[in-house]
Length: 100
Image (cartoon, rainbow, N blue to C red):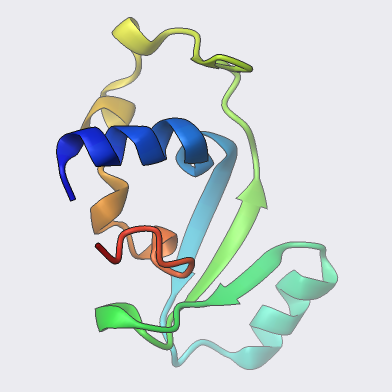
């Protein structure tokens, strides 16, 4: 995947700006996963790659700087946002966004 293709997906997706993801190993207590589901969190299993069998808990928590047009402070965004590359994040792999 080229950097241009990644940028197109980033603009379309923005999941890292809208969600906090917690990745849990396959050995996690299934009752804990059920507890999160009962509390209304999305719990998904990664179905492929080196993290197959891991679980992702999605927490809906949009960034305060996310506007309809994208990041309103993009040029001055936080260091974590500048350095983040979702192609290396197992929490983003469950939907197969980076299979190219």
